[in-house]
Structures are given as C-alpha cells and as structure tokens.
Image (tube, rainbow, N blue to C red; front, side, top):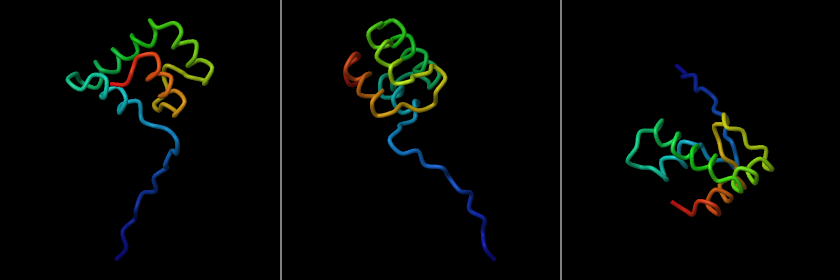
Amino acid sequence: MSKYIRPTRRRQGVTPKSVIVKAYAPNLSAGAARKRLSLWINTCKPLMKALEKTNYRKTQKYFSKAQIKLIYKYLDKP
C-alpha cells in the first residue's frame, strides 16, 4: 500500500513574512506582530521607497533576501 505524498513547492531565496514579524515581536500574536511591522515599514519613508524598488507589495506572504536586508538596514536586526 503506497501513501500519497502531497508535493510541496519550495521557494528559494525567500523567507515567510511570519518568520520576520515574529522575530521583531516575539511576545505578540502573529496578527499583532504583522500589524506592528507593517506600521514601522509604512512610517519609515526611506525604507518604503527602497522596498518599492524590489517590487514589494503589502499583501505578499514572503520577503526576498534583498527585502530582508533593507528591513535590517533601516529597522536594525531584531
């Protein structure tokens, strides 16, 4: 008897947004941490402009390596 294994799609070079937001606010729920990071990103105009150059969208579920580097540059590492 063989089991069906659902194929997974791996995304290389990207990190789930949930991982980054929890690193910045580990004591908050996932939703609250996501809102906090979004607020920080939106209020830091130089960061937002830099992210827009990397095709950043507020609704994306993953951050690219370039986007993470920009977040660390403007908001410091968690």
